[in-house]
Image 1 (cartoon, rainbow, N blue to C red):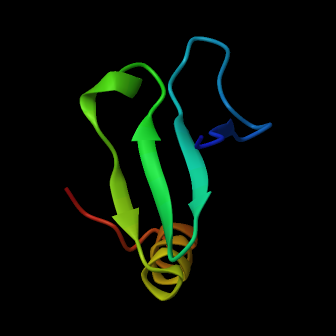
Image 2: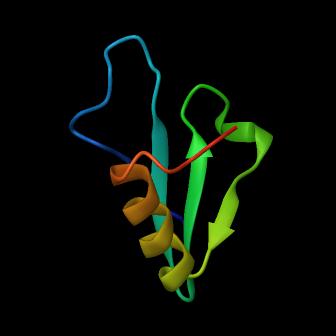
Length: 60
């Protein structure tokens, strides 16, 4: 069974993502729609995502 967790910094109205550690990946899903699927990233790709988010280098 996969254990999902939310950040302690999550907003009260549910605007957040949940993370789960998998054997060879980090899974990410929308906490408002957990049954809609999730994204699996390698640990390297997940680390890159965090670096880019902290630098505000993500675009839509």
